Image 1 (cartoon, rainbow, N blue to C red):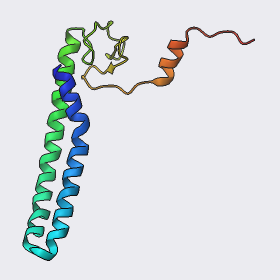
Image 2 (image 1 turned 180 degrees about the vertical axis):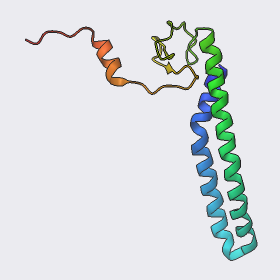
Image 3 (image 1 turned 90 degrees about the horizontal axis):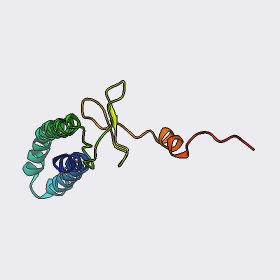
Length: 128
């Protein structure tokens, strides 16, 4: 459950920060003519807020990987909670139920769609 919340927060965090900065830009642009000092203040606050936003993003990513590692140590899938097969040679694990794949560090691996499609099709059929 904790992993799902952290994964969703980490997935949408970048877009939320982007729209926050777009809103601040529009507010600063309109304030140029009304109160110029406020627009200058918003520019400097935006620069410092960007540093904070990057740090928060890194903390969210680390928390997500930590929650995934906790589930992987229990041999449970962080996404669906089902039992996982043993790790492969590289230390990664793939859930057969939901298709989620994770590195040993807890980071999600991108899906290998070509390999998954080949596994779903079964053994090669002879051409007729």
